[in-house]
Image 1 (cartoon, rainbow, N blue to C red):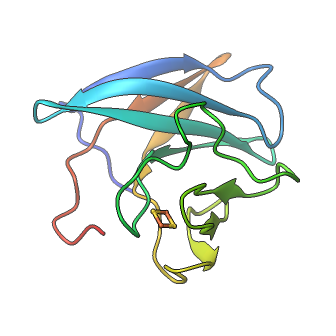
Image 2 (cartoon, rainbow, N blue to C red):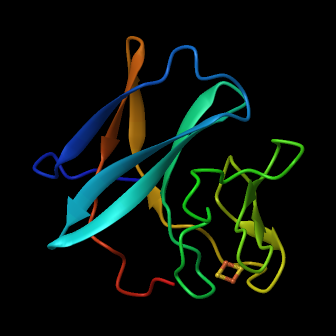
Length: 124
Ligand code: FES
């Protein structure tokens, strides 16, 4: 995904997170306070906006838990949609085929730099 050099970024610690582990982080976009999800997808960082494409609720129930019990998949706790950590694509639940909104990220030493991109016009 191309990144905008002028877009805001968020720096997060990635080293030590571990497979299946996540870190939620706050950010603001167009005056709206949102939460992002950083996930270790088999050693690779992936970042998504913490909003389900079903009803745009946060995946967690306010407790920061966005994974299923096996810690292999991202889970929306509202209606059970499950997403692949690697791509954010829903493979089970009410929005199969739709995806979480990805945020570009790149490794920088022990950290990850997440770029806050504009909301896609066709999302969700
Ligand atoms: S809001 Fe996520 S599955 Fe319904």
